[in-house]
Image 1 (cartoon, helix red, strand yellow):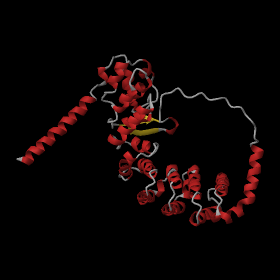
Image 2 (image 1 turned 90 degrees about the horizontal axis):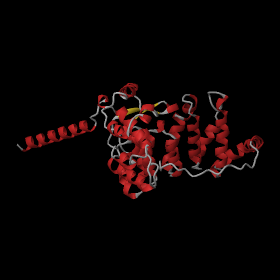
Image 3 (image 1 turned 90 degrees about the vertical axis):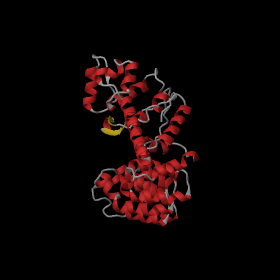
Image 4 (image 1 turned 135 degrees about the vertical axis):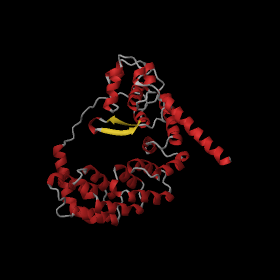
Length: 349
């Protein structure tokens, strides 16, 4: 009997919360003024949260925005929240914090970057603005404590100063079975705590995802160096470095890798840099990336050390010639730049 009662109770709770969630997003397009219904239908048919819509901007009232925020269509909720953040008539702090549980997936207009898929709450946070630093910090606290399943929680964790009260939360976030594009942020956030016992955890995350490393991972390894990361550099060099240039065309990522690696100034980093510097041909994909070799030479020179002594001797004449060319191309002109006025916008990320 006890098991049956427990089962019935659980079923009731599931039904209760399911109904509660359905009631929250209850408004259909037919519940709005007829004059704006065609525009709302059009927005839903596009299936993308657009950056701008004239009807939402100029024809929808504050009361209607509040109803749209409870629409059955996530696209309309995203559009409504975006507009509500633009209007001073809404309390943006409450608006953000009260909608962090909207986890419906939507497509959003990312301009030249195309279309991004994200949760409505992530979209809301992306556009978030606050009147005070205190309000912003309260939102961060709520996000990390109660909604750290959101992609934004990982991103924001990487942008704040490490605080001991969030350490265990961020450590758990970094070790979740998620896409690396999410946990890369929380891994960087974990590294900021500079705890020796976390180095093996971070190394495993980077090693398991060597083929996806981005600027933030290279920044992590250079800002919080550890000899344990050298095998990550070596694996990336052997299996990925030339591919990201010649096959993927992501040459700036190659520079991020070189800068991070060179900062170690040890025999292992010297061995990899020397192999890249003296490879013949330097790149199999032709002369269009010759500037990468020039950048490599500059990077080695800027990190002069005993381990790089032989390479520095080799490149000294090239560095001297490059410096001469830079002076001729970019003479030192004194220019009086206008004084920039401080921003009057609300506090953002």
